[in-house]
Length: 319
Ligand SMILES: Cc1cc2nc3c(=O)[nH]c(=O)nc-3n(C[C@H](O)[C@H](O)[C@H](O)COP(=O)(O)OP(=O)(O)OC[C@H]3O[C@@H](n4cnc5c(N)ncnc54)[C@H](O)[C@@H]3O)c2cc1C
Image (cartoon, rainbow, N blue to C red; front, side, top):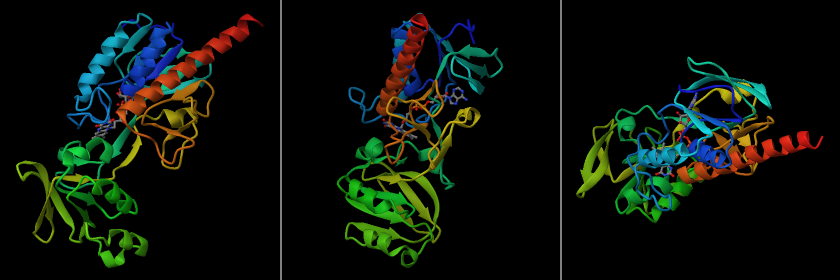
């Protein structure tokens, strides 16, 4: 960590798209800002980032490198390329404890530490995740199009997902992974009982990369010894917060685990803002997780923190 002192208005914790955009916004307003982060990001497994205007197909690391260069042009922003272990305190006096470094006191916090996916424990799955195995049809569906697209597990969300993906796929294959279709909830069974959907009941033994009609695909090895070849497979990982700050600061969270924020990115604790995958807007049914959404939320949260500081300084100045 270089040149760290206590002279900061805002700590941005997290240097992915949410944190970097927050830092850019704060730097442009000459806010004394310190950015914490390690070189680890949710989309590390993906070699290309889709569905971001002007950057469709860009490697995520390339976007981050360009973003970092943008931010480094603003002298009021310092990068502390290190993780944070603990955050404590309250508005105007938050204490950020970097891993192995001196604590830093800041007036406002923008949390942008993201989440970590907990992938199903299927042999071979982790190696293919972010490529021919993915979780988001908006990010990866188009790359799997015109072949058989699979879903691992027959969760209640699968009928709607297969309707969405149905326009891309030649056919849909739902791998119930050892669950008999007869045992599924009747509404779910009805959702799967359609001509374009094939269900496969055998348990999944593992996944392998393969070639399907001249392009990359995934071979699903079943416990009965048979194999299903797909152009892509969707999984629904569980996830958890990448950092412990919601607990440490006592932030209100949604049942699913996201930090609840209002439309400006304010959390339930004054002076603490949150943006990106770790946050869950109160009016939305789920966290909206994409690079563009994270960057947009980072901009909003940083603007809100900046305005909050300005309002507080103005109130002090005019008594
Ligand atoms: C496989 C995969 C593919 C994807 N593909 C796409 C796609 O094609 N298009 C798209 O729009 N979205 C895609 N996404 C979603 C996208 O990756 C996320 O929505 C986006 O990266 C969220 O950005 P973020 O800034 O919130 O978090 P991240 O990018 O995950 O950044 C988190 C930051 O927090 C830091 N951090 C974590 N813990 C600490 C700590 N204790 N102290 C300090 N810093 C910490 C990390 O070091 C990092 O800098 C994909 C996701 C996955 C999993």
